[in-house]
Image (tube, rainbow, N blue to C red; front, side):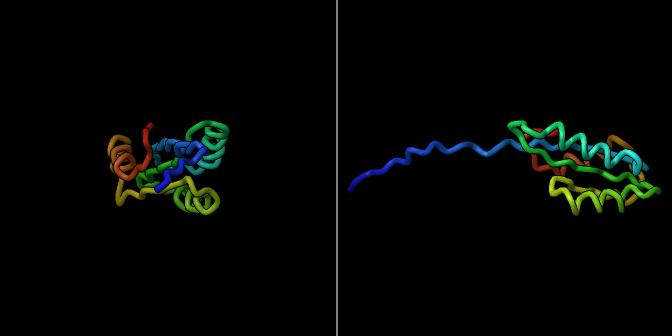
Length: 103
């Protein structure tokens, strides 16, 4: 029996960085933030997911973010059932993140 070896080195998968963002009433800032995240990770050796945690926003943040998610597969949304605050929002986001690193 002969043994064959691939001469093509397998490139490891790019690491995934989870960016957790807890927010409330940030409709004005969401498009800019998403664009900046895309620019920041462009050309990097890592990919990212943006985990947005909606802490009971009363403005158009959630529908706007849902529309952004349709255009950007990296966006994930956690919608809190009521206002919990930043710390609990970050914990909720971290609990659903899939990254090799979480920031």
